[in-house]
Image 1: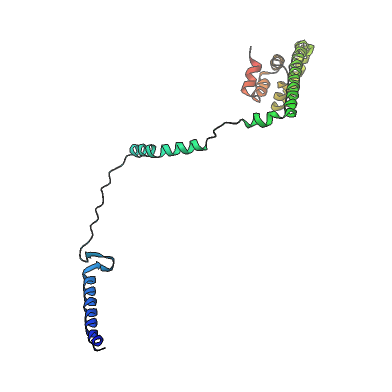
Image 2 (image 1 turned 90 degrees about the vertical axis):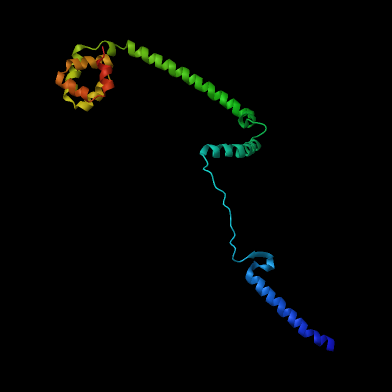
Length: 197
């Protein structure tokens, strides 16, 4: 037991010496516990690389070189391998729908023929109408007198209902002043159409 008691001062002395060494080394170096033995007074110099001016063309070339393959591969993955016409595959297989479309097409063709025939009949009726070709001078003079007594806007509207040749004859029977007032109420294209030779 004497031996163990005689060792205590040696242990305490070793503890004091190690503690002093740790405190001293920790004061000189940054952190000895992480094994960073860089002296405290020394500053770490970090070299910053100089950056060159980068042009837009070089950035564009870089992006095309790096990103284009990735983008094209992503787009290719999204593209369907087989193109399917869903309208033809699904809708046009419905026979009832195909039949109704054929009937509608026939009805449209019939209606179109009817409209063409009716417009031809109407043109023939106008051409053969005695009222449009043979209007009595007395009727023209009476119409000119009535239109001259109306407001210019109303007279212009009524004048547009007549064929251009008849409208021109009516204007010729009116006084120049009244005819000019009525023509002023019309659009320039309408006046040019009525007054052309």
